[in-house]
Image (tube, rainbow over all chains, first blue to last red; front, side, top):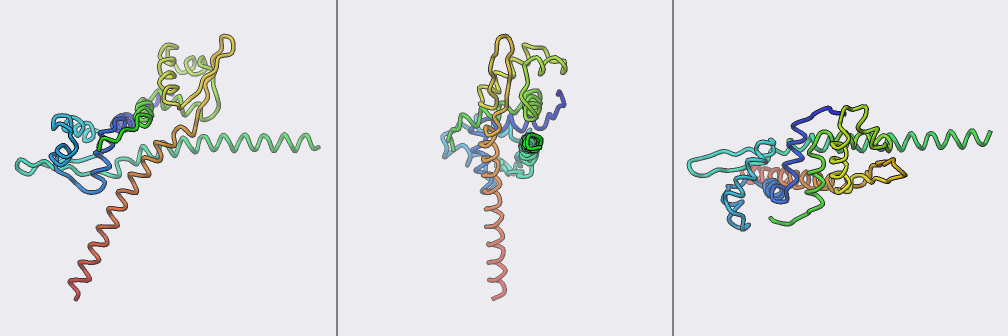
Length: 113
Length: 113
């Protein structure tokens, strides 16, 4: 029960903040300069920078600096492990429902004998 | 950009820990007593209880006490908002790829004229 997936923990941690989720949605449309992510949204630059660091460390974005301008871009495939984990949970649960149905069918058959 | 989904934040926070993810996988198979979740796994009871509180507050599990025995069960539909958010991100990204393809096609057509 203690199998560790540090990347998955870091990924879900990065998604556990509304500002970071908003930044990802914004970057899904197109890459953006850091100033574009702070200016119009009322977020202070240090706040945005702090969130960008968390997103970059989780592998969800990449940033590149050209002179004084830092641009951020989404790494969309980085969300795949989170999606895979959720799919796995659904499969476990559905497997359980299948087993319960099979048991119920068996019980019906035996009571009909 | 500051639209808040407190439940979604709480949900992703609950998933950002390997022990809590393991507990969910275990409960996807069948409900369990708290002692079943701590005993064989080498986790101390207070540690398990702390994680169960986070999972319960996020709506991912329910617990019920019968005498001195507390049993935990998964609430599988509670993962749906996380899945929906990931699907939404994929749609945003695929929408962007579609737009880029449309622009490329248009550019090809115009250069062919």
